[in-house]
Every structure is written in C-alpha cells, then in structure tokens.
Amino acid sequence: MPAPDSVLSRLEASFDDALAELVELARIPSVSAAGFDATQVKRSADAVARLFERIGLAPVDILEVGDAHPAVVGEWKGAGAKAPTVLLYAHHDVQPPGRLDRWESPPFEPVVREDGRLYGRGVVDDKAGILVHVAALRAWLEATGSLPVNVVFLAEGEEETGSQNLEAFLRKHRGRLEADVIVLSDTTNLERGLPSITTSLRGLVVVDVHVRALERPVHSGIWGGPVPDAATALGSLLGRLVDARGNVLIPGFEDDVPALTPAERAALAVLPFEASRFRREAGMFGDTPFAGDSGRSVYERIWRAPSLAVTALEAVPLAEAANQLISEARARVGVRLAPGQDPNRMRDRLCDFLHRDPPLGVRVETEVESCVGGWQTDPVGPAFDAASRALEAGFGRAPVFIGCGGSIPFVGPFAEVLGGVPALLLGLEDPVCNAHGENESLDLRDFRCAARSATHLLAELAATAAAHGGFRTPER
Image (cartoon, rainbow, N blue to C red; front, top):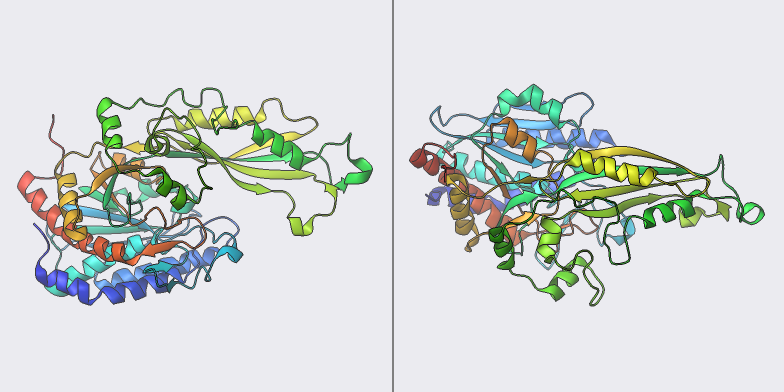
C-alpha cells in the first residue's frame, strides 16, 4: 500500500525545506574523533533535537552514557498499541574533514554544484540519513495529522568512532528503543539511481601501533647508521602485513571466513559490474590490477572477505623535517572482517603479528581502538517485501540486494537485543559520493527518491504488519 497522494504532494512541496535543513545541519563540524571539539557534536545533537521537535515528535531527548557523545531520541506513538513500532536509525557525527587543501569548497560550507550534487562533510554520511526520514515524517504529519506506524527515531553521536559506548547505551535505554522492525539509513546504493537493500556488513578491528626507537630525536648525520630510527622501523613493520599483490600475510587471517553458498555466489554474479567504471569511481590508476585473491569477484572481496589497510601514519610532517632520526612513530591498522569472522580472534592475531620479532632496537606497543563483528541477514519475509515495494515506488526501479564493505556497529547488537527483529538497511551513498574522503557529496536526485521511498515505507510497513500479523519471517 503506497502513501496517499496528499502525503506525497506535501513531501514534494517541502523538499526544499528538507534540503535547507540538511545544509544547516551539515554546517556543524560534528566530528566525533578524538582531538576535535566535542562541543560541536553536542551542538549537532541540539540541532537534531530541534528538528525532531519541529516536525512533531515528542518526547525528544538528548541522551548521554558516560563520556559518550550525545545521541538524540524522538518518539511518536499515536498509531496505537496494535500498530507496529518502527525504529529509525541514523547518526549525526561525521568523519574529520581530512586534507583541507583537497576540498574544492570548504568542508563545512555545503554547496550545490552544477552536477546536481550537494558537497560537504557529512552531507551523505550520514546527515542525509536523518533528513530523509524527517522529510517523510513531516509530510505524513502535516498532510494527515498522524503516522500509520509508531516511530522511535534514534540519531547516534559516535558511529564514526566505532560506537564504543553502544553496549552501555543499549543496556540503559533498551526499553525505550523497543521496536518491531529497524530501518537504518547509513548504507550505499550499488549505483546512482539504483535502490539497494544491504544484507551484510563487515566487522571492524582497529589497532594503533606505536614504535619507539630513541629517548629523543638525534642528528641523522652524526648518529645515522648504527642507531635505529622509529619511522624506518615502522615502515618495515607495516611492510610485513601484505605482499606485493595486496594479499594479507597474517597467519590465519582468513581461517574462519564462512564460505559462500552456491545461491549467494549466484546472487553476486548477476549484479551489474564494469571493471573500468569501478576503477574510475575508486580513483585507481589506469588498468591497475585489483588487489587480493583473484579467485574471488570484486564484490566478494569487498563484502564477504576480510581486508587490511593502514589508515593513519604519524612521525614528522615534511614541513617540519630536520634531518633527524625519528624517536617514535605511530600508525593505525584497520581490518574489515567478513561477516561471521570472530573479531576477538582477529584482534589477537593482528596484535600478536605486530609484536612478533620487532625491528632491531625498537619497542612496539599496540592499543585496540575498535573490535566489532560483522552482520548478515537473509532478506526474506514481510518486512523486506514492504521495503522492496517502497523503494521501487520511490525510485521507479526494483531494488537489488547487496553487501557492504563498511561497518555499522549498531546493527548486530541491537537487532539481537530486540530479539532478532528484521533490520532494513536502506542507504543514500553511491560509488562516487566519496564518503570519508575529501569532497564528500550527495546526489540530490537520489535524495528526493529516497525521501519518497521513506514516505511509502511507513504505509507499506503498516499494511504489511496488519496483513501478516507482524514482521517475523515464516519458517521455511
């Protein structure tokens, strides 16, 4: 059952308002990473709370657990006890802006360019995920005065740092977040204009490695030769992690990767893929070979296999170089885990590998920053049928089912806490949006289509729950 014409008309009439609200929210530099101004994340939470209140959610609260960045929860429970409750999830914190000189416009001054995209940090990851549902809820409430379902809307404030306080947050607020289905707007569409339902996420293990070689930097001419330096040692240590083809050399790295079933492999094979386009959108050079196991398709390597990357390096900036032997250097190593891999096992294997046989004369220390497993679901049942109809109505194309190489730590634990309720992962990113990189952007056509889909989804979930007595997948 699609949304009524009156609601869709109201959505279209207020779309420019939603875009303006997205721009204002994205002006707030709500970077949750350590070393950035935490008051800006609080400011962002305040802005989200005002948005929730303005469209008619009540109560609306800013919730904090310990020293966590604040989350925002808004409710609308006017559909009655027999109607299902839908938990909407997005996050309002963002990644650091990165290299400012690589941005074509200031990262926190969002701008629409001639290509029909909105550019700025957080515009697609994930503040658009908030506004797409704000737009849908407002259209329903202004056009009809009600919603067809009960809603709890959660905007998290530390997703980009691994949701480190998630367990404590769930313990404290589980009762308020009870729902029959979860809708998460923080994933990717396979292509621009092609709606996609994500059915798997990789896990994430992040380890910081700190190499110390000297008590202090010393002159590289006077001491260089017999005296070790931390930067060279760190480079040697990191070089052991992968071979020249990008294969990870940590023993047992893939020992517990679940094998794909024939049906899963066939589902990957039918998805559209063009190697040259993939290389171009990723920013690769020419015909560079794809790294990793050539026996796996690219989609399998991204979605259903682990990978490793050095995501940060610190020693001395070039502008401050002084022909010294570096006393200490640091790096961050991130491992994306295949769904089903044990994150604790991977953490231990990575740390053991980094500590084993350290380069001559240096001390190696490690600190675990994140350790969360992946997630996977079988997209079968009334909730997925409802989502498929809503996406097709909004985009004019039937959706595809895909995996995601990224991680959303919230999904697995919370779906489990709620007794395994279905989780619908419906995203706004596309291959060229450059989330986490410079010049992050949102395709405004997809933003409009996603808002229409979100509007239809509320009607579809209400009708589906009434017809099936809920969202539980029937036994097969």
